[in-house]
Length: 333
Image: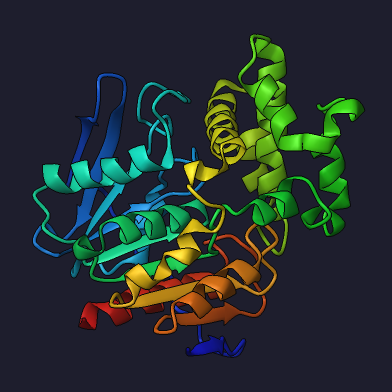
């Protein structure tokens, strides 16, 4: 069960240069949802599917840069209700298992027999594991960052406390502010009522507060520009925050739509034949190292790299280095 702590003196790999998609489209997956997808890199390369976080976060252009564009055929898409997929922030027929089915529909649409790699961080790691446990025959390798398995203990650590609020009491005050004190015993439940309610002003207030909380805690060194993505008072920021908060909260109050709380770790033996790389920041306050450790223990063949001076974000230098190293390593499978 190999695990290593990255040497802080290691010369860091950087992201591959920015690239643009060679193919984009919208795929209708049912009579409600239409998903944005894109392909970049090598048209004839080994296919990798990139699963974004949240749920509700949407795909980002820099996701393409974790992969050698001469080797990989890089498939990114926006999950139901997120990013450029429509309808925006929609919660109808939006569950983990709908998303697992969507990955299969995209694979089939693009005429891909097997993913050379399934790649995801945070919620994207959660969905990567759920998909791979459901369709292990379609997965050749897995790369996970900041693992989240949507257990109740993980949710309460971040959204209820005690937990992350002990490290970020200043940001926590802003997170709880929109919720009346009488409702704070169940923060996720209270937020869900407002995020799905009819008061549009309150909905936006709560969406921004929910999103800013996560962005305030995602990096070891707080990034004001990152927080501004949800905090600014403009249509683009409101749109992002609304999808991010509504869809996340929807999944969380519904316990991930699991049959049992620790379903992903309990079923990890289904992945025993799939090479797996796990990367996590030592000081990840959103998806603490314990979850990556628990999954690593349930997958004795996996490799875990601990980044000693990093938090949760995929943009932190040690994490970038470790993820790029992992995707390069898996080219040799």
